[in-house]
Image (tube, rainbow, N blue to C red):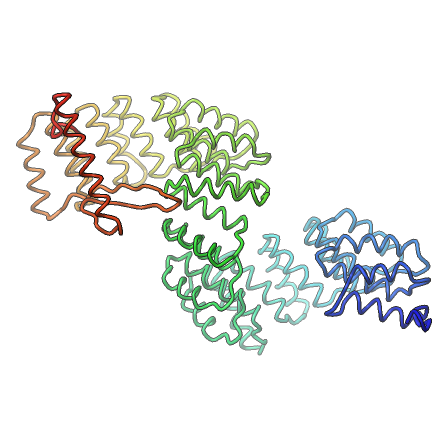
Length: 602
């Protein structure tokens, strides 16, 4: 073309630019270089180049080309601005989008439907929903795409009620919905968990012969899952012929959420291709079901499959480490975050703070907490609970007060941390005050855990009768944890009579709990009431209750091993028992040196 002179012909040159910009063999750099070296490229050439960059991972280049276009002889048209609005949406850069909108307004192009719909999308994604709605309501060039753009935008921004109002308004104005409209409507029902309305929309689609595309069916599966109608969700999934990755992931996530982890794992294994999303879905399911060992095993499997973890993966992994107390694996995850240069987001930072606190390194938790540029109420709560559990009562309360000063709203878990801190620190008056403030200041309704903390606090202070009276007059039925707090206080202050009353109630709640029998018998022994202790042991034997064997765990090379009495499940159990035998012999040796009896030791 260069040799023959065809390159100087506008039509031929524009086709070459289009090939470089939007074909399957696109080379955007070559296309833009070609465009900028043409003598007088036409607007088609500029538009396809802007479109190519707006569709790519380099949308900012579209803005650069637009600035060059404004300095050229060509005039932007109604095809130029939709691609620019799309680029601003992807960056995202609402400020530049508004400037571009001003240019389109000056040229009188905002009345074009293609331009208007792209502009609505920009306002929905990057701007305020109020401005998007104002722009929509004041326009006289709306079509079905306009409605769909606003409805689905509202859903994505977490405004399902307003989205459903628009669907109703569409019906009133006689505009018939399509598949895209129904995706927005069904997704709104999913967010609101409005099963009845979602079912009505489903029935409407069947009655009116709407095509059940894969995205629409996925939305229905998600809605039924979130509304707890697993049977309908499974029925739709089984009937779907061309299942997408979203279809599989939605099912895996939903089943895992409701505790059907075996079925979720089976579906996961049936998937032919998996990116990080289904791995995250199953991983989160294990963590939420407190099956932390399975979560760690799945993560190691994910690593072996060469799937790159993302932030969501690491948050779930850190939560699993928190449950297991697996500090070594948690530290590895922290090193991975640093190595991959992940930004310390609120979610990731909070997970790290929680992991280090629960795994015993409160100093590291405090350091990360201090390094975080942005913190939310969950971050502060994790730090407060961590400090409380490590016995730093005053520091936990100072963090709570600071949290209040910056205007964050505490939740029920925050107050569990604060009340626990008061218990550990013996801060009786402060604990009472915080418990009172829950309802009077923060309008939070205390639950059983809060009452158990207060009963524990009263009991530690020796106010046993007040603690018992609180248990009896609670507005909710006390559970074993509340009665257990009272029982431990009775044992601490050697009040056998009240301890018997608490233990009796505990045994009514859970007659199979061996720990209650053991503790009650010990209480009698401490009070030299051996006949009563023998009766407790006899009752335990009569009811066929066996003492729960102790369990210990250790983390080695990122793997957590658990052991119980007479455990022979480990592949190296012979070496383990040999080591235990040696330890026992050494203890016997020290027993003779110190003139004590191992049988007298706790």
